[in-house]
Length: 398
Image (tube, rainbow, N blue to C red):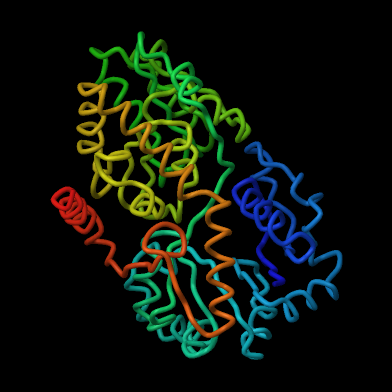
């Protein structure tokens, strides 16, 4: 089986998946990068090392070869590439194409009524309803968006991003996190409005009576504003601002922390820091509105979710963990298991290749849960209720 993945560029969130594909397929796996990485990403600690990997081909350097790979591979994985013309050529030829997509309407599903937008979606997606075209949903809100335009009926599956998975012994995990002193809380990402880093300054002030320390890894347009607010409130000893760090440095911060807080709103397509924090054994408190959260977290089992981007509900969840240290530790352990046993690149690739073989034979046999399991269509406003209802059913079932 030959598999080609076409996307804008390869990055540290895609490399583990691609490495796992290459491990399985060797020279029959290819990644086509259609554009160089933006300067903004490079400034954040990302790098171009991926371009040197043996399976990576740059469209802007070897277009003829890349075109052949798109058309001649048994399977095309199509992420956002800016070269829809190449994907359309393959779709028109009736060849197996598996799209990987985040949300269509993250700013609001009301945009689905736009006649111009619907025409565009018809050309890219809807007219291939009966073709060998499938959708991997990189976020729990993706199925609802595509369902609105009647695309990929019965052909949508759970998917996401797979950062590097690390494996620790129980002894290593216990040594990573100091259980005798204060509770370390980590927040990681760009300091921009959609990610709500200001919640952490507010939380530090509200938790002055608790033995906690907040670690802020990242930077951006709100950085000076946040530092000034922290200084004004006398929080200098309670918050550490690290600035932008490499992905490896962020992971080392996560490894020593007990709680990870993820405050991004509905504009966050996935949120790979959730994978990384769970893999680091953190008890995650996350806004249900971000794409990764409903797929990765089971409330009060391997983390906690809060509704509607509510600061108050987020603080309530954090206080619950602080007052139940044994539950906090258990959630961190379960979070680690979720990533190492299911939501990791190797397992995702195994399921993908198994499913692709079936698709080539005209059948689909998805797993019951995890990557490639059927993606339920849940309206964005109903997701928190859906998660709580499912959690209650699971609890009763156990």
